[in-house]
Amino acid sequence: METEKKNMRRYIFGTMAGILILAGGWWGLGNAPSFAGKLESTTFLVPGISCGACLPPIREELFKLQGMVDMQAELDRGLLRIDYRPPLSEEAIVLVLGDLGYPAKSVPEQGASAGGEAAVKGCSSGCGPNGCSATASSWGELCRKIFGSGKP
Image (cartoon, rainbow, N blue to C red):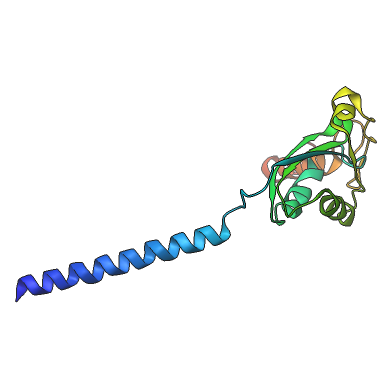
């Protein structure tokens, strides 16, 4: 009788483990990034970006799109290189960047590597040629919280 109970427990445990593994695999495959289709790389001229504070909202919105693979920025030149797969397209990327307030246009890879247009200094966050004011103010606030009410 004890052997039958052990065998039944093993059977139930094994069955449940198998179901969980299959369900996890099914869920994972349904949510995995698509590796179908050719990897595309496009460089975009985005004159409004000039500091690191501009990138997180862009990255967040682009990675919501199916097919997004990677993003690299050359802030001093106002360039974003975006790697993606279908169904994502250049047009969809330009649309997302425009909706975020960063009008963009694709540039030929040769033009981007040879020295495209310089980025406009300053961005919508109030950045200037000496860096991002949003970043500077957040560091200042952190210093005030840690060290008191004096200047950092």
